[in-house]
Length: 430
Image (cartoon, rainbow, N blue to C red; front, side, top):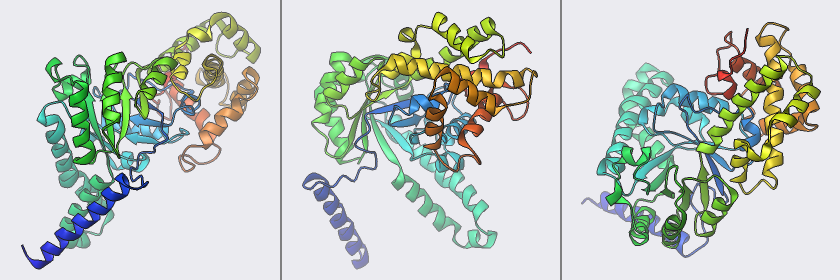
C-alpha cells in the first residue's frame, strides 16, 4: 500500500471513529430521518389506488408520506403522484421497488430517496436489487442527465468521472431502510423471497437489527407485517429491535387501523408507525359518497342541500375517513375531522361539476362559496394545508390551482384527467 493510500485509509478510519463516538457517546443525532416522526402515510402510485380529493386535509395530520408500491407501479404514475403531493403539507419521500421508478422529476420532488434492503429475504433482495439499482443509475440515468445538462465537449472530457461522482453522491444522500418482513403471505414477502421459515424470532431480529444499524449504517429498521397486524408477536420483536439500535429509527408497518394499535406499537419500541391501505380506502369512500350525492341532488345543489343530505346519509363514525384519522396521534376528534373532510370533498365535487357537464363556466368562486357554506372554516383550512406545500408547485393562488386540479380530475377535456385523484373515477351523466 502506498503512503498516499495508507494516509487516506487512516483518515477515513479516523472520520468514521469520530462519527461513531459522537453518536454513541455524545448526543449527536446524524440520522437524516427526523426523530419526531410518529406517523407516516404510505401512498401507492398504482393507478387503482387513489388519493382522496381532500388529501391535503388528511395529510396535515401525518408527519410524512412514503411513495412506493410493489404492483403495477411505473415511472409515470410515480411522477404523477409526486406532482400531486407537491401541494401536500408534509414532506414526501420515495421508496422505489424498482430502480426505473426513480427519475429526474421524482428526485427533484422527493424529500429523499429511501432504499429498501430486506434482512431476512433472499440475497437478491439485499444485494441484487441494490446492485441493479446502482447499475441503472450509473449506466443510464446519470449519464442521460449529464448529457442533457452539460455541453457535449465537456461531457466527453469529464463525463465518466462525473458519472462516478454523481452515482456515489446519490447513494450517499439516500436513506436505507432495513426491512424485517414478518408476514410470509404478503406481496413484500413474495418479492423478497421470505417464507414461513424466514420469519424472525425477537432474538434473531435483534441480531439482524444490530447488523443493519452498526454495519450497514441503515437509517431505518422497519418491522413489516404488511397488511396484517402483528399484535403481541410484533411487540416482542419491536422491544428487542429498539433496545439493540443506536442511530437507526425503528418503524412498524402492518394492520394499523385504529388509535389503540398505533399507541401499542409506539409504546413497545416503534419510533414511527406506517399506515397505508386505510388511506386509500378513504379515496374509494369519497367516490362512493359523491356518486350517491350526485344521484340524489343532481350536479348543482345548494350548500344547504348538500349539508342536509350528508347529515341524513352519512354516519362519520363508520367511515374510512374516521378509521384513517384514528390512526394518527394528532387528531383529538377523528369523527368530527372525518365529517369536515368529507364535506370538503363534496364541496369540491359540486363546485366543479356544473362546468364539467357543460351547465356553466368554470368557477372557483362557486367552489369557495360551497366550501365556506358547508363548513365555516373549510376554505381557510384547505388553503392553509395547500399553502404549507411547495410554494413553487403552481403559479398563483394555491386554492385556485387546486380547484382547477379537481375539475381536471372530473373532466375528460383538457387539461388531461388526473388518473390518481379519487374523483377521476366518478361517473357523471353528461
